[in-house]
Length: 93
Image (cartoon, rainbow, N blue to C red; front, side):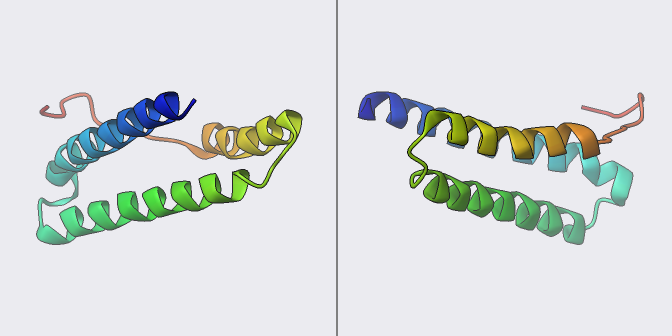
């Protein structure tokens, strides 16, 4: 079980640190390309990372699988409800 956890942690860290620069790089031309945009993007993703770690720490205390899944579905549903990412079609990648 710990090997699976290690592999999943490695994959999530890889995805986070490969997605974050791609998103920030694609937003730089739209938002002006200043250092403030890059710093804000880094700050945002680091805050999300800390929130993810704190939620994982909190979910370790949940013993029942049904409660665990119910708690995990709440942020996913909120994300799907509130997300509205619209980028221009001529965005250079």
